[in-house]
Amino acid sequence: MIISETKPFVQIIDSLKGYTRIFLVGCGECAATCKTGGEPELAKAKEMLEAADKRIVGMCMPSAPCVASQVKAEFAKNMKSLREAEVFLVLACGLGVQSVKDNDRLGLAVLPALNSIFPAVMDAQGNFLEKCSLCGDCVLDKTAGICPVTLCPKGLMNGPCGGVDKGKCEVDKDKDCVWVLIYKELEKKKKLGDLLEIRKPRDFKKQTRPHKLMVNI
Ligand code: SF4
Ligand code: SF4
Image (cartoon, rainbow, N blue to C red; front, side, top):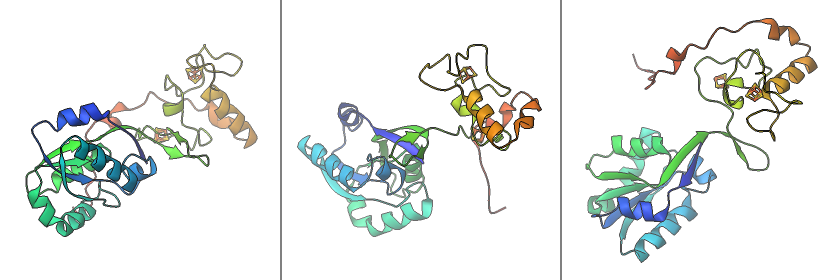
């Protein structure tokens, strides 16, 4: 999921300068889970914006605003209020904001209410942990399911740097060195031989942006 945080309200108000009639769009997936774009956050945004003399002409919450079909379906249901709006304020990640823009047939302004921070898993306690950098060349099969690209601050691919100290990372002494974790995990699984394979420098071409994956060729 994509982790997001709410922009400071003064920044949102500043971006809305010159607009009065606002249509709010939330997100029923990631932003709802982050408590930045679900129903309570839409209601709070409405209250704060109305207190700042803005008019909320309508709102909707596609379950995943990054999916065109869901945005289109919500917009079709809300066309009457959308025709009154001057601007969308989107409580979703940057994907959701751009998807709203791409699927808006009325040519309204589209503004973000959130900052997108990182992709993450949510653990059993509800913490969000960054575990993958979407590098396009996954090595988890050789690293006991632990990602050195993301979890090592230097992104080292062939074992620890010289700074590892009593198993801790030199960049953050509170954290275990990821290569120590990988070693212990491979040892448990009797797969230490995987460490003998020297990985070539990463092919950064695989991270050239923007990516595109066409499904209907
Ligand atoms: S190696 Fe790490 S960053 Fe790359 S795809 Fe696998 S988990 Fe993601
Ligand atoms: S101590 Fe380990 S995790 Fe920290 S930067 Fe060095 S190799 Fe990476």
